[in-house]
Length: 193
Image (cartoon, rainbow, N blue to C red):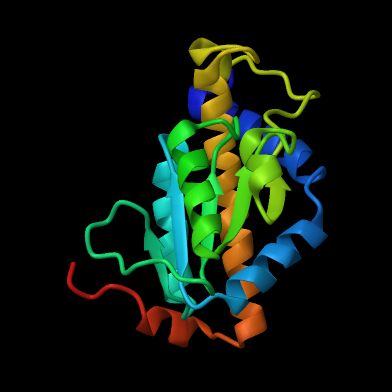
């Protein structure tokens, strides 16, 4: 009999594998180019997206970029050469859409991480990376305990897991393009913990 954690890992893995087969590498490369050209990077998500957005912001700093998480009190103002990464599964989260519109008015560029390119955020962003909500071929038996394909709890969990993997892929691509090493990245890691 398979344990819960083994079944859970298998379902997350199968779903991520199916989803990532549908993510275009060229879209990831375009985001990397946007980030390399940015003076400052601002990251915003709500809920699962917000938790993993904070990880992205931290890791961007580790590879030598200047990144902030929106709503931190110490953020400097956004400027024309800056990038706003807006993470919203639905692409309709009002706070995120409103701030993406504001970022564009300031003259910044917006990167949208969404499940629907046709969403408000998807059409507003300068570049969009679509993360499908769910892999249609994955059977959920363990994760079914928190919902099915129609329940936000399940979809949010899957989206969160997938963007976490995606963000590490972006960070690895950035590190390679910048010529970073494990030592240079580690030197930027927090040491007052």
